View: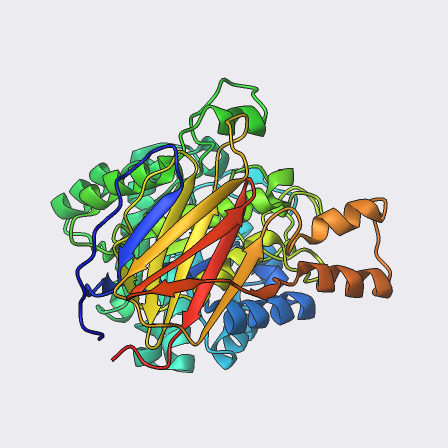
Length: 495
């Protein structure tokens, strides 16, 4: 590390976007927790060639290591069906998915859902693909299914491999849409499932409560403790639209009634509740609306960058919902930009949200203290060997003020950089939806259109002017509303 020179931190002016970092001070470890897992929609989609191509790209370019999806036990997967009043187990389709994931260096975050019709206690269904969300009519048969399935994977993939997977019991059981919504019913299902998994091997990882809106964590931990049930990790979900606005409000109104760092505050509470157990958010997104136009726009990129950076030290995994618009909870769409959850659209065209994760993936593993305060601008400084990246977002919730900002960065105790590169995501950069709008918003794309939109989705790279004087490195970056910029400085050596 370079020798430390005296540095004076500039006074904090909350109306000016001025940020300061002393490079002579060692930073903190910065694990890429957001890359632990990413979400998908429905298990059978993972058998599609286009889903697999997009998953491979998300792994290779964004670093995702696990994927989670619904419906592994649904009838369309064939995992358990009724054949002439006899149970017929078939794990072939699940194996095809997991074989693919392992072949590209990924693993499943196994959500054990939903109920095979043969075991269902009612006809309660959800989603376009008609997932049965009732409780099992026979818990013994349910336990047999889970033990057979997990035991099969241990036989196929080996115990050491499957011990690295995560088994999550059900999805959002606190919502009546996914069952009774009653704790006692979920706790019974969890007990049967966890015991069945541990009967295969005690070191397999099982957890829950997989709730919406950070619910039931304290009660779940207490219940497991009182009943000698394993809870190897805590999982839950949150969205900035949770519990904001009034019933019937549109998504924009819900977001406008939220607060700018609400997910950080919720994660802090969940972290305290989880204690020493690993905490995984197995769903989060810019909103819970599967047809939210903001999912496709620079707004999502600015939200993602700010939210991920604020979750540092609070979560062990942070699974964005979802990596692709190949998704069919409501219906399978065809419009190229329809407000879907995905980081990529149906054609694999990267949205601004995808580029945000690309920016984050490029960051190193040592985060330094960055001083400064501004109503809409946030900045972070992350070191990676002989390079350093300053990340900047200019974010506000809908209907809240946000304007173009010139962000002034001062880095003390810096060497003269060999190169300085800026990347941008904003209305005019890495924004394929804007080009699609100029095309007339066609419902279907020609191959030539797809090629043009891929090009428009690219994140431009430019040289960044910097000034270096007496060990201080300074530069200004103009960041539009809801824009993100990263400035990467390359040094010949930081020693």
